Image (tube, rainbow, N blue to C red; front, side, top):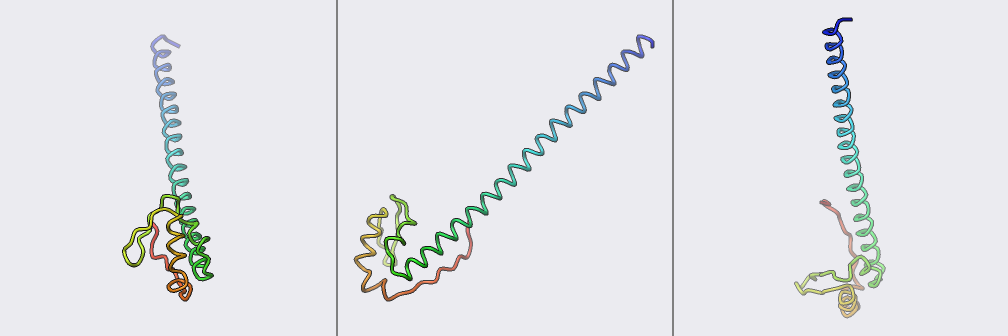
Length: 119
């Protein structure tokens, strides 16, 4: 094999190796993107199930008149704006205020929550 043929063969080999490595890197990036998208949609669906179950539990708690359990869905620093437009701040105040109006306004009621959309 002549020197020129060896150089050409070496260049061909280098180009092919470069293309294989480049394809390998691109395939890894594509696979990573696909996995990230799949995991994102998986978490979103899981979040929707969690939100749906919390709302269903609150509906059940309200209808059983279990104010303490109903309020467990609220965080310690939650803010609830009631039907009169009053702000109740924190789980503790939410429970206290619901207990104050329980006999007259909550106990005789039943609720049915309907989820229109979760974003």
